[in-house]
Amino acid sequence: MEDQTQRELASPAVQKRVKDSFDRQGLMAHLGARLAHIGPGRVRIVLPARPEVTQQHGYVHAGATSAIADSAGGYATLTLFDEDCEVLTVEYKINLLAPAAGDYLEAIGTVLKPGRTLTVCQLEVYGVREGGERKLVANGQQTLIRVNRPAR
Amino acid sequence: MEDQTQRELASPAVQKRVKDSFDRQGLMAHLGARLAHIGPGRVRIVLPARPEVTQQHGYVHAGATSAIADSAGGYATLTLFDEDCEVLTVEYKINLLAPAAGDYLEAIGTVLKPGRTLTVCQLEVYGVREGGERKLVANGQQTLIRVNRPAR
Amino acid sequence: MEDQTQRELASPAVQKRVKDSFDRQGLMAHLGARLAHIGPGRVRIVLPARPEVTQQHGYVHAGATSAIADSAGGYATLTLFDEDCEVLTVEYKINLLAPAAGDYLEAIGTVLKPGRTLTVCQLEVYGVREGGERKLVANGQQTLIRVNRPAR
Amino acid sequence: MEDQTQRELASPAVQKRVKDSFDRQGLMAHLGARLAHIGPGRVRIVLPARPEVTQQHGYVHAGATSAIADSAGGYATLTLFDEDCEVLTVEYKINLLAPAAGDYLEAIGTVLKPGRTLTVCQLEVYGVREGGERKLVANGQQTLIRVNRPAR
Image (cartoon, rainbow over the protein chains, first blue to last red):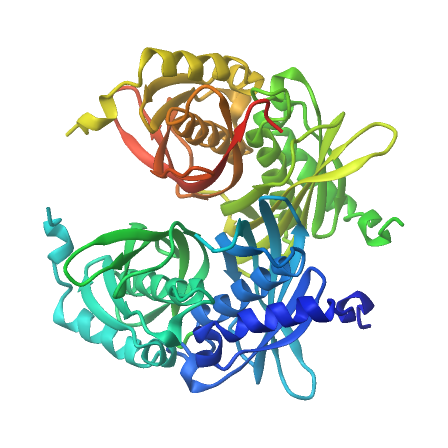
């Protein structure tokens, strides 16, 4: 059963701001990641499994898994604030629960506790096979700080 | 003052095993990372700052920073075990202490507590400028598990 | 709306095993904590707010908050295994989201990913006022290891 | 070889401020913990092993281990700021490396990266036997926030 709240969209202005920022992240383009959904307090990023993102056994590298999880949490947080601020990751912790296998990974960042200064997000990454199998491969928790532009 | 223990080298056989595994990590090559030092229980990986590894403000992305830190800890652990086993990251936590600026990043993984099943590593990442300035930009802690080949 | 799955009980044998172990934890009795619910893969522990568990501002100390969260995750994991094994905490990470205020705290440990060797739990702690207000004050993630008796 | 920097003392005014705050932590007294050293950016707390602080196998409970580690990091941070502010734990992550055995535990909190808003500390806990054996039993990393009085 699809969680309907996961389908809600952020406002066009917020979506544009997130997309513009995402497009400035050289790493996301270099890895081949793309924004899949921008909701209020929740963002999804998809990363196709390619040889360029693997570790030594051919699964997606924990670093690539973490990169899209970190960005998903950062943009989930950014959707909650106005355009005069930026969001920076303070720290995160991630458990790699299973080999990151599948045709693509989907990272979901969800704001758990928004705050004026600090925000905490939950991070989930699923390995997905075309056709439908979907498995949680990583789960994490992230702390972010809001800063006024220009960023630190 | 240079810490002399950081200069000790692992045995040629261990170095070869680490290099071979590193060369199979598609992500490391794709990011432009390279092994800089393989010591017993301590490995350094260097990542030149390039547009391909940046976040939205032009600093190195937390995901790239974490990727080399994670690999450094994994290979530091691998130096301690014989060739019939593999090492997988269970989880890690990393604090981004400062913007990851510099000409290149240097990640250092150091085994803090080796174990038959689980090993814990300290992760440090420095931003380095050619000419010498060197600043700690990230610090973390990682748990790894030893598994018999073939890996899960 | 009450989540009905939170009401499911573990088998009497499992409940007894968890209770016996909990009763051997000197710290839980000393803090005044008690088991509130033992379900399969989910355990709740309650801690009344008393001066003996506070930090300098009169809220419950992060150490007491963490202690019941850690035990809740450990016992949630123990419900999944048979009587010949023990469970030890490998590590955990916890965010203190709000001052731990209320008449009592309720920690909920939930198994997120069980495993033959390692299990990962989600940890939540709520501050609860008699009468009903209920607020998430801490959220964490924990890794545990199963060991054969006798424990290390 | 004793690290001489671990012997440096904070100013009398700072020591007094830390002691006063520590004395207001009901949990520390209830556990039987005491301040052992207050240096600039480094604080040590000692906890005698007693049945009141144990887990089910008779070792010190991870919650008690964490409680003194958390307080040590908090007070290490407080030594760096003036009297108009307070310090709160944002989050921490701790690895339990070995059974917390010994006659007493010693937690050392050390500021790794001070900041105007956020500070990051390293946390270490040793199990110590009278007579001298000393073993690292837990290692962690903590993020703290400075707030103006009165605290949130």
